[in-house]
Image (cartoon, rainbow, N blue to C red; front, side):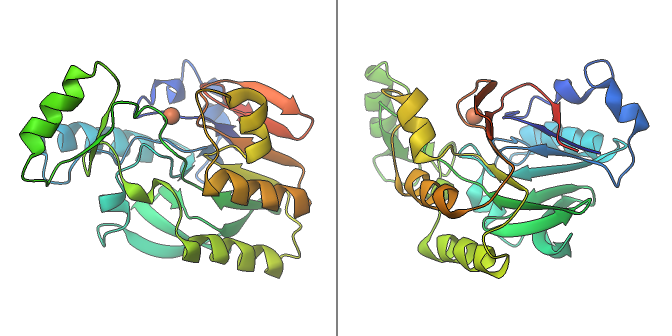
Length: 256
Ligand SMILES: [Fe+2]
């Protein structure tokens, strides 16, 4: 069984047995995929208070009967995801990062074959809640910058604390995705991304979400790729756009 859902932001209550009773029939061979903004790797590693809470939830997910899979989002601590804190390993024909034995980060530009179905995955997205700017945590003027940002009354984020530039992919990651798809002759079953593609943003996101190199990159792939369904998170809505495109938030739906 394969289920899929949208952004969690570290609130995993949707996976308790009451909300998701289907799990009673599942095993570790079955999985739930999260379309980014997983939220389980968010706080500073050295933050003992929050780390305890985060580790508790990761252990809770690990104790579940199913395997948890996620692509990264924009609300992901990339200082940690891009450090050597988590071990890399091969899984279902692709490369993953092991947050726990059965809580796996699906990487950008990989294809995984799960239950005979090919999933192309690509995390990341632009943060849109930054109208008040991005304050650099390590700047000598941090305190003043913070006060200034506070005084705008607009949402702002702090570099290395609540915002990371790796929310958008590097050239290498984008090229890796294209190379992988070429190997699969641009033919997969499902696509899982955090960011929607450019045409979806144009259709629904005007004013709040903007185009960037990732939305354009994904649109280029969408036009060329043969796929059955594309799942994205990020926009915090549950909506089917076309026959083959779904935006997911709290809903958990069965893929296979
Ligand atoms: Fe989100």
